[in-house]
Image 1 (cartoon, rainbow, N blue to C red):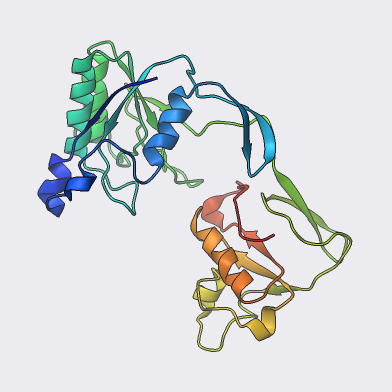
Image 2: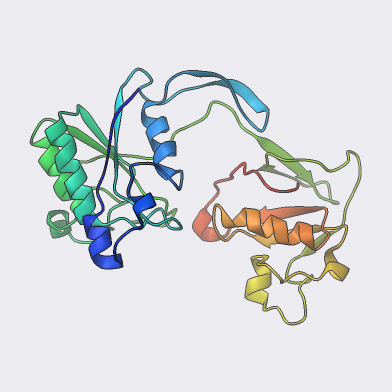
Length: 277
């Protein structure tokens, strides 16, 4: 399946200093590369599930493909911190290796003016590939739903959004006035047929915590004497940080968390592996 692996770090090291010897490998330490490569070309895998939920068969977009990986991102904490020169070197190498298609799961810059397509590294690399009859497929970025937030929009780039599922991991919350709101969760451990009080995180904060920090349920912001045994309403800060918000609520003794999107997250709901309901 994986028939080749190379890494490109010259630009990153020129700016950040030499990498440790153990890092100089095509191995993926963060998970982003493994995730996106399997999304593009993963085999059929029966019996897959998410914490024993939704058992079924998963596959990549082209499950019969053979794949080669070209590592260009080096930060262990920020998967988006990749250098354009390393990406261009990898694209050139892939072209030289004779690949049929290039999947680049790295967002380029927002191209504000038409001439920006001549300076953006992803655009340059994609044009070079297409001139050799090799299609480059790139991600649309992770921003939105505001206007003008799609990246990799050069006319010679095939830009795609995230993949889709044929199922939904939904949960329904029923309020005291019988209003029902559907959200998503992978962990529901509340006892059935039992009501709980709902408290906003800003009403349940510690005296020394700011409203802005408490609204996002940041660590050390919730007062156990106020939130214990209740459902805490928090606002989402990011796709991964929200699990940390749940940990703060759980540590403070809450029974669960009602996580609300802010306008920049739109109406997307995510079934995430939280530490409690």
